[in-house]
Image (tube, rainbow, N blue to C red; front, side, top):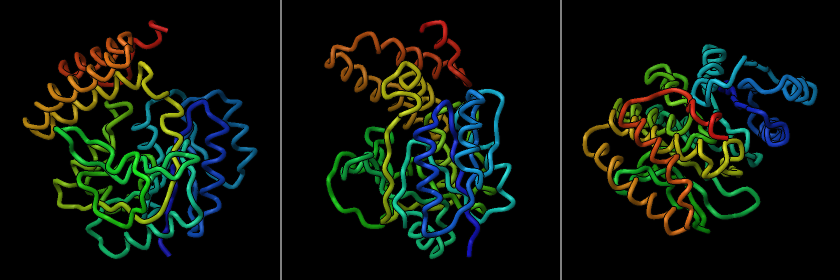
Length: 291
């Protein structure tokens, strides 16, 4: 039996993280669990340790971002694992999710990583069956479809909220780009893996996602990071993708917020674009001053 380590990165969230861990402990395919705490209040960490004494905990002194949090966990367990399962703390898995993913991964060692079909929490509507490129931007594939999804190769890549990675591929491709801090780190990794000839799968298994429960959907941080980081990732991917990232996607986003009469949100997105063009990396340092 292959050894699987599930890594859950937590930041200031007990309830969702606890539900996520419970679903991992209930998997039909056994996995070891490493909780990486990204600088949360010590009381939350202690509460999680008491609730789940059987899991390992790695506590970081500050919030280093999702990419660095994942990397810290990966470095701790990579030499003890055949597979690493990265699971967002706002994701809940069906009992056989991991078992079905392992079965598919074992059929072809050129598959670097896979994900389940991710649905909205509490619903049967698809949130992501991987990603596809739309005008140069990685959109969620089959988003908002109410349909049965079998095992498939996604048109472009995977989402990182429930991503099972083969350790040998991880050692070959490398870890996540920590300078992105959060958002699009899995897209960057998938692009690098594809360049090395690897494939991806979306498996006929299911996970339920609460969608940006920690950072907040369309929060200032979310808007900043999706704008900045996609420019950084697209620039590395080539001129055509960078052109779309610089022109087409920003026009679509700006039109969307103008239509919703949410003009105040535009400035955070524009700031991300500016920093993406300038090559600014790391944590968004202006968010605290603007609260």
